[in-house]
Length: 200
Image (cartoon, rainbow, N blue to C red; front, top):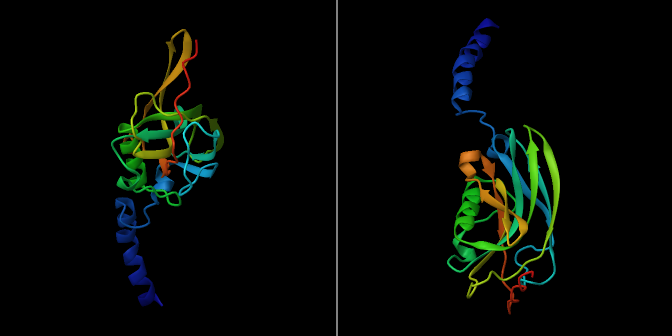
């Protein structure tokens, strides 16, 4: 009996060392990084969206893996420089690749409508958040080549614009904060609807 125990006992230290080194039993990325999930949305690919049409609703989950406080944003982003097929957005799977593609979208697009929530949480906390917002064609943008519904987190700052309070959100870089941003590419239906006139 002893000769059968010795081989397994000799593997205990190497296997433990490998696990500590991250080579064995390493948790999946969604167990290590804070994850954002689109549970339900009034828009889903490949259904097209007309900017300025019906309000967008999004039900989302936020699962914390670190202590975080910031802005949680659901936003329609429009671009005239990137197209939907230039990014790989996986709605079903949490991945660093999707998170980095959302970072890329945020850096190369402008808002076409959004909703913002201030959130705070600790590891293993799951928050259910519902968003609702109107969309519009970004002022000064010609043809829209890419349209994306994204979930992301960032730092928020309240400023005054034309006598009204407005929130500016600076998106977090996903791998700096270990947050799995999420998004889907949305076909654009035409014709686009002009943006609403500014509030007097």
